[in-house]
Image 1: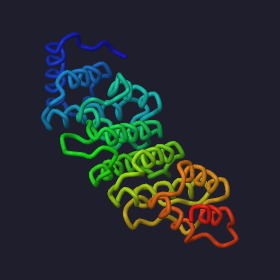
Image 2 (image 1 turned 60 degrees about the vertical axis):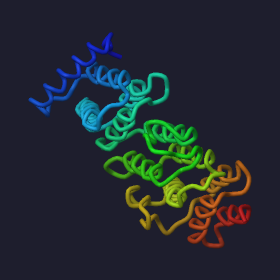
Image 3 (image 1 turned 90 degrees about the vertical axis):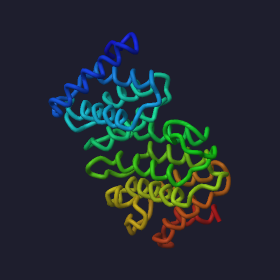
Length: 277
């Protein structure tokens, strides 16, 4: 990691120079050391204006997209981004959370570890009822509201990259963790729908079925596939769903969706439905 400015004055001076250079030549990407300096400055003054957040988020996204391999967030780039946005493991500012999302949205390919990190940051904020992923609005702890759901949808769509690849096992596990952490709350109904569609998208693809692009599959009313998970995926679903006892409404909706396409000869999915009934 490059050296960071030693003082607020030095950080401000660095930011001013970067902003002036980008105004003269918007196509010129910043260096990694400059990206680290901008994010260090953001942590020093956390109540920044929207224009400042846009400047930093776009500059960091441009830096990541221009670095080879261009347009792709590699695991190495993802590790650097996480370490720079959250040196102590937790994102501290709204600018940093917006930077994370814009970098993901700009990329053609995004590793699952970055999506899992983003979901984890959202979960931490939801549990506390405050944090950069929530912003200044009032929020009940351990409740997923409509804005949280929209934020989660943005994460999941961005994580699919240009090809809308299927939801990964790591993402699915992170979604189950978020669901389990808020299962006793009255969550926004849209969260239940997004949750079960994302889990179904993963399970069906992992079963070898052709899956619709995730931006299509995860949209309300979007198409998934007329199929059902295989025995291996049904066993994983059973373990996750029954880990904390009887299924929640969201999990039961997931099972009903999968069961609606399952022939009676597919004993794995019907046994799962029977155990949840």
